[in-house]
Amino acid sequence: MGEKKDPLAGVDWGRTFAEAVAIALKVMSEADADDVATAGVEKVIDGSAPWDPAGGKTLAGHVVAVGYNVLRNERRKVRRRMNGDFVAKVSIAIDEGLPLSPEEAAADREERARRYAKLLAASAGDPDALAVLEAEREGILGSDAQMKKCGLDEAAWTNARKNIGRRLKDILAAEEKKEEAAS
Image (cartoon, rainbow, N blue to C red; front, top):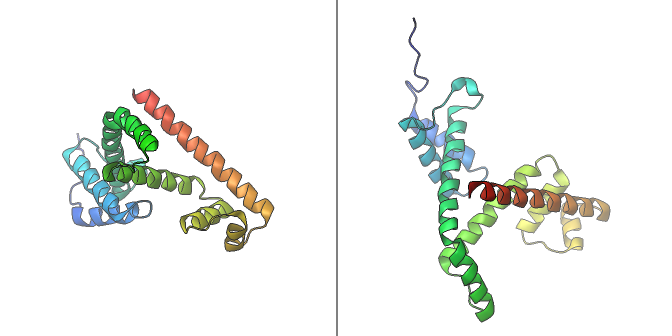
C-alpha cells in the first residue's frame, strides 16, 4: 500500500507567509494582516488546521482563513470578558461626557473596520453601493455631495443607500446570531 504524501513537504514557508499577508492586506490593516498570517502559519504547521490541496484553496488562502478565525476568536473572547464592563463604562461615559479609554476606542475602531470590510465584500457586485461606501470613507457626507462624487442620480443613490442598509442589517444580525450560538 502506498504512503500518503505530506502536502506540506517542501513548502517555502517564507513565500507562503508573504502571499498570505498580501491576501489579507486586501481587507485589513497591515498589522492585522501580519497577525492573521502568523496565526494561520502556526496552526497549519502544528497540524491543528491541516491543509487539503484538493480543498480548493491555495495554501496561502488556507493560512489566511485559519489565521482570521484565530484572530476573530481571540478578539471575541476579549470582548466577552469586557462586555459587561464595556456597557457600564459607555453608560457612565455618556452620562458624564467622558471619552472612551484608548483601548475601548481602539476595539471600537477595529470592530467598525471589520464590519466595513464585510460590507465591502457583501457589496462587491454593486458598483453604485461601492462608490457610496468609498465616498463615506473619504468623509463625503450628504446626498448631494455623494451623488456628485459618485456620478449617481437621486434614484440610483437612494437605491445604493437602501442596499447598503440591508447588507449592514444582515451583517449585524449574523454577528448577533453567532454570538448567541456561541454563548
